[in-house]
Image 1 (cartoon, rainbow, N blue to C red):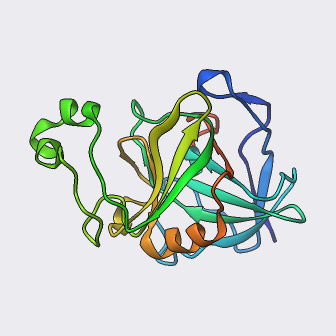
Image 2 (cartoon, rainbow, N blue to C red):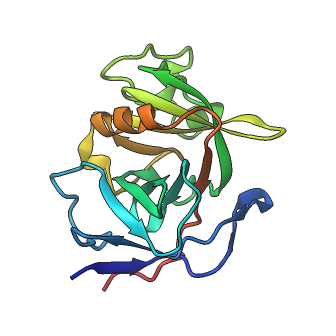
Amino acid sequence: MIDRRRFLTTSLLGAGGFALPTLLSAQDTTGEIAPDEPAPMDMSPKLVRLDNPMPAGEIHVVPDVFSLYWTLPNGEALRYYVGVGRDALYISGEFHVGAKKEWPSWTPTKDMIEREPDHYAKYADGMPGGPDNPLGARALYLFQPQIGDTFLRIHGTNKPDTIRRDVSNGCARLVNDQVIDLYERVPVGSKVFLYEKGLLPKAT
């Protein structure tokens, strides 16, 4: 029996007026889990079939179910579990992958330093890439026209307990082995859609 979760039912408008395409539902032959259940031990991506097929080669992040979908031909997608930005810091909209980096360096933004100086000020000059770097093993850099780098990232983490949680300063994170898998699939220039929060009913 295929469990289904309907997650977007109308055309959406993201931050900055970017129209987001409709993604009606996904079918997962292994079954869906409610977003407030404990994260599964198996974080591996799962092949799902979309009821409303999307163009292949796009990333769709649906924060209400902590899921990132990499669309494939024939109406299928790979679903990865992710951690997303805390409510006030999460930004929805349409982006594209403007750059990719392996074991990227990291520098906190000015806003991050202002919000939490005790935590971030010591890294104002940057932190070299490596296993303890907050961006993890790989990073996809999200850009927008006329803006360039938005400072939003899809990146790795060595902290699996942060997956399927509202934890970050706005970015989406995957465990390191899964971001490496995604990184190899996604070329520079790929479209990225970050959907708004609160579009799905709470799990009961």
